[in-house]
Length: 201
Image (tube, rainbow, N blue to C red; front, side, top):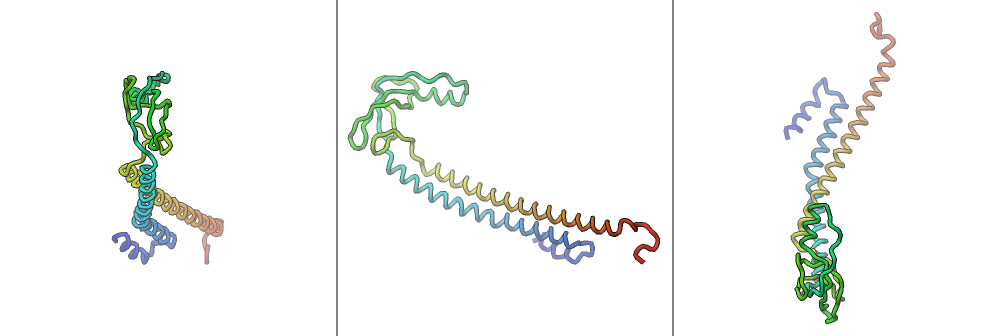
């Protein structure tokens, strides 16, 4: 409000050029868009993303099933990874040959990664499969979906803010270039006679 009031008073200042007033209006419009349009865009994008992700969560939970797989034998581990983060995750899992039963009653046997640090023959572990018994990833949960939706909303709001700021800078840059061009033309006219007695008489 103080900015708007100051702009309204400044417009009658004799030192205020039309370009100054135009730049101020551009800045004000950009500020309003950032303060109003960006949050609205973020909220809409987040809501749409959340609805789409929740539908995906429901679909995945309907199509994927958690079963208990049984270790047949432990398989050789891949080469040691020097990355401590990935090596820690690798140490908590093992490659095994396992068997499991699909929801349709069919038996399956394949190489999988088990959430066992030291598997033994006969150990069981959870395994996610589809309706035909093929191994799939763990389905997305609602908490993770909500987090992704929030990040999508924040990203949309940030993108719009950056777009508005970029447009403002481009408009101001073009206005400044036009101002300098007018000054150059005025100097070309007045420059040769600058300082001479009787100039302009």
